[in-house]
Length: 358
Image (cartoon, rainbow, N blue to C red):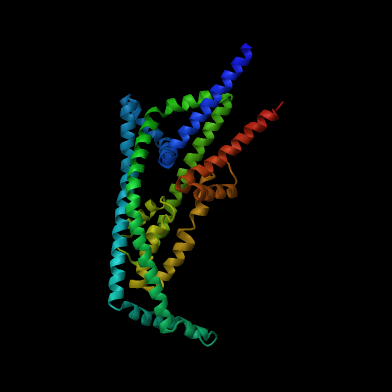
């Protein structure tokens, strides 16, 4: 009877813990993205925290100084880049409206016809339909539709940005608060979680190492991809003849971390400006380079860099990155490869227990 009561108590206790755990997860769901990013940032910046702790001998002060470093190196540059981007979008909208009001579409149609006919003159005899496609009415209609689309898109984007700012400010607060306590008390929390895992010490070590390598591998891959994209963008901006191309390349690198369009938030408006107001041919070249190189390169460069730290085949890494982004948004960039790597590690541990050597 005592054994029966003991089992009832054990099962009831575990069921209660499980239900309360589900309630805790449910309450934290609205904040899961900033919390996850904060934990990931704590893993990345833990060496900085350890460096400060070595000289200050205080976890509290070390966590505070590390938080200041994160704000200086990550938060402030993103805010500056977002401000510069909003300024350029406002300028672009003003120029577009003035361009239409001053009859710029008619002038642009004639300019486009002249330039395109120069390129197509030699093949017009073979493709007579081009003359019909490029007639003045068709070009005017196309440009009017394009202007209407861009104007509506940027107007809705501005409205959404105002709403998004409120949520982003609160998310930033949650991120910084969680990051501080993840640095300050993270080591103790990891040790508690480690003791609760019903595994051998060697297995626990392998799991924690897999998570660490996956997170740092994604960080290196993302930063490396942003650097490559910014160099390509720098060459494109220099080709345009933009003032301060290095500054725009830096802004492009910063926006590479922002979903869903990343670098497209910067190079696309600049290319549209080049296309409509400066040089049509350079703008068309820029659209090709932007879509085919700058915005596509992360699908190949990031898994290539990550493979140095995450022991997964290239094709699996590719689907882990892209699938993570599609499933979880920006946070999925880190969760996708980590989940895949952890799954492979758990399979390896299961195989080791099921078929021990010797």
